[in-house]
Image (cartoon, rainbow, N blue to C red; front, side):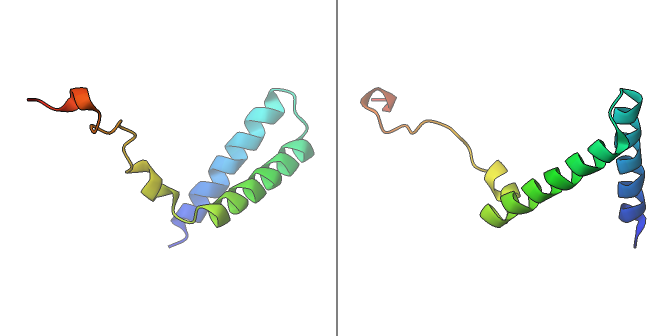
Length: 70
């Protein structure tokens, strides 16, 4: 049941380690992650189910005169 949490922890460790190897301070990476989680939470409050948005097609409507096949 907690497999996803274990996976999440490992991925976070990989992310932090990668940025530290590239020269970032570990504390700065932790702070940035916390800030991003806050942004994700705020976005979730604005759009509680963003997956629904992916199913919307952004196609132009066919109600212009040349769209009819007469």
